[in-house]
Image 1 (cartoon, helix red, strand yellow):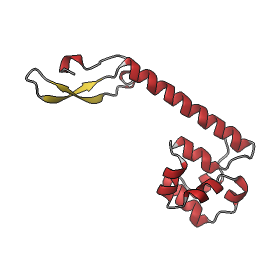
Image 2 (cartoon, rainbow, N blue to C red):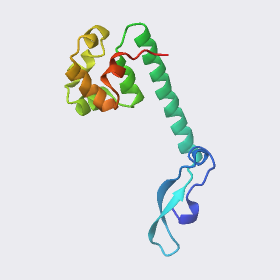
Image 3 (cartoon, rainbow, N blue to C red):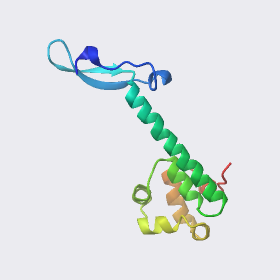
Image 4 (cartoon, one colour):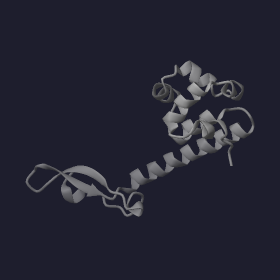
Length: 134
């Protein structure tokens, strides 16, 4: 893509005063960096993915309210993680992370285990234990 062809749509990133760094070819045929305010297709894709994430978070909140999931699931969704990423960051096998989504098992977790999760989410153990959906 030539330097002059880098998308500069005033939607998405531009509305948040954020620019993306792209590589383009200048007039001499050399690669250079150019700031882009985004392009419509990418903004639409990002908007849709963020909507899906928000839906998953709301569904998780509902499940926590109904006693189907522990607060661990909410914080995992908010931080855009999956079980394997959370397990890796916390240093806990994914089998056990899945078990900890069960509210009864979650309540029995030691403070040491809760601290591992709280550190990953950068919250206190008390915030993790006492989370209630709005």
